[in-house]
Amino acid sequence: MMNWKSLVENYLAQKQQLGYSLQSESLYLRSFARYAEQQKEKTAMTVTLALGWANLAPSGSDIAIARRFSILRPFSYYLTDLGYDSVVLPTHYLGPTHRRLPPHIFSQGEIIQLMEATERLYTTNGLRPITMKTLIGLLASTGLRPGEAVRLTVQDVDLSTGKITVNNSKGWKQRLLPLSRSTITALKHYTKIKDKIIAPLHQTGAFFETDYHQPFNIRSADYAFGLLREELRLSVKFNGHYPRLYDLRHTFVCQRITAWYQAGINVDSQLPKLSYYLGHKKVSDTYWYLTAIPELMAFAAKRFHSHWRGDFQ
Image 1 (cartoon, rainbow, N blue to C red):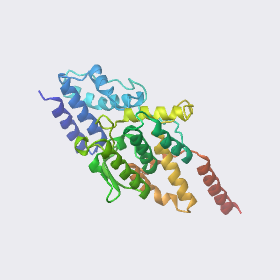
Image 2: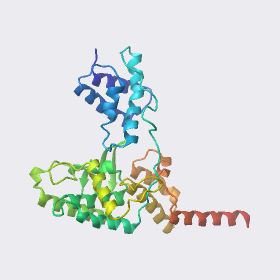
Image 3: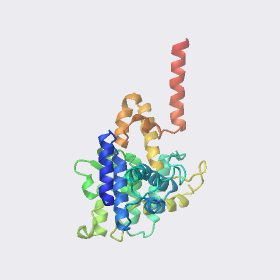
Image 4: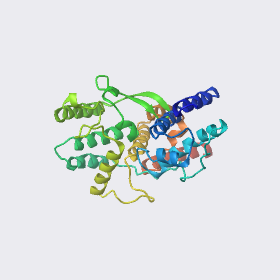
């Protein structure tokens, strides 16, 4: 009788031999195997076991929990094929696993207001305000996923060369991101403040930390962002959803493409570079982040008008 870890590794090996990469799925399934071993469960898939692991989604959102549950479904088929006393997990048991939440595209003024408002977060003389301010600035200037940003370690952030290494991101094992000068300056300032508040010997190795000598996590970041959102009266729902920290990624894409249009740069030729920078495997994934903001719609109308005149005059 094999243990959970062996079953997962054998499953991944068979799928990879068939040509599947399973880069993100492998991380989740190995996490599930560790969880199942800790629960001392026999090697049988149950809805209760799958739910227990799915509910550990870092963000705690319904969509993230449903997605984790659905990832286990093909693996549950594998277990039943091997003859284990397992159930095949039901489809859409927790609802949809993918949806596009209407993003809030932040203006430059709103981003500045958010960063300034962090100075009033509790404790005002502690690490939390500067941690949140630096995190918001990093997300706005790089388009990182919030989860990627909070998982950065000190070793991942090379301020001497001005580059960040993103490990185990969605779809990639690793990618390297160059930073702007202003971003490098802000990150250097953060490390100096952190070293004053927390002695280097007592730091956890995470780049973003709390006053309590713990890595800053996504739940803490989302909670702090909620406080900032309420203070700045950004709590009005947009198409049924509140502005989110993740919307800074959407904002980054829209602002970058707008800047290219304004500079007269061929956007189509730059999109593959932007896709890699964002951690996408396909350019089509980057289109997911485009939103019909007035600036982009104006450029689209201008291009259509030029095309129409060229074809019909």
